[in-house]
Amino acid sequence: MQKLSRGKATHSDRLERWLGADQVKYLSEHFGKFYWPIAVHGVPGNVHIMPGGDFCGEIKAGYFLDKHDGAALVLKKLAYAAEKKVREFKALGTLMDMIKGEDRRLASIGAFASIDAVVAAYTGAKGQQIPFQKIGTAPTAIAGCIDMWQKAGSPIAGAAGGAAAAGTVPTNATTGALGLQNVGGAGTMHYLNWSLSAGVINNSLLLYDRIFAVAAGVALSGPTNTAVTGVPTRYQNATPGNVSYIGGKFMYPVNSTPTTAMAATAHNWAAGGGANVGMRYTDDAGNATDMAVIAGIASCAGAQIDLLLGNWFAPLAAGDYGVKNILNMLSSAAVATAGADWVIGHPIAINACPVANMACLDDGLYTSMNMTHIEDGACLSFIEMPKPATTATVYSGVLRVVGE
Image (cartoon, rainbow, N blue to C red; front, side, top):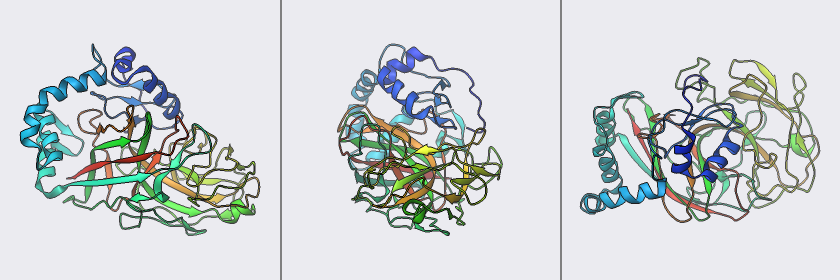
């Protein structure tokens, strides 16, 4: 979305019939704290979670059936046709069946002239399917979040961030990235959809572009104020509405040692206190800003986000909507075991799995119709959202993107 406009409130009864009351509550609680609207994929219409936890936009489902009943009915109708069409090209067959069930006259889908233009691009050497499987880890407690970047699977685990002050600007060629290829003729890619299966019920992943990472080093083990000079190269436009706008970018600290827990030391990420003191960042308007204090986690598990349980991003100052770059780092206490990275990310899509070991399609074309922009060279990865249990979870699926 290009502005923080709530628009028309989503019909709550229909949303609960489609997603289920528990899933609606989960999304509201864990994404309502975020300072930027996030599209709710998998819901027919154009629904977003707004700051505060409300839902806005039209929902075109939920009149009588929930999504499981609706899915069963649709699948039954498509089964015969799918058997014929999808044997060799499953992803393309599914996409075509979806399109045949919709109004082909729909136009202006983001940068595309029509849905037909999306199909032409996907089938004309500008589409890409990226299979993946990632093996998670158990957090310290329920509502812990795991950064899947350094976890095993396919792609293989990525490395920790570079040392301060420069840090690292990862790309699609960086080990650990999903391996996006820049296949768009105009150099512009878009999220289309992804199928995701989770080994544990009600777990969810955030797909994001990892645009910067820096090792905290002595900012955590000292603790010593540590300056950061490295700046991301993607999503740095200061103009609201631009596809590369800074608004919506988030940052978080993570245990950068994937198999070793942090020391059992109470600590927080210290509130900024002016130049070179505490946690500092440059906001979406280009201002040097002090970050609000937030607690870390004593004995934080390997690859777990080191923020108060239930949080997957660090809080920004009032009125800020994004992070351009990090300026300074500092912990309130010395944590001797393991280490931490500070990471800046750009959110792309969320996929929730209400049923274990069943592929859930997250659609970015027919639901929120946003065709989220993905910059060339994007380092795509995942964050496991606040977990309803402490069970280590295996995720697998296929991501699909399309270029203009």
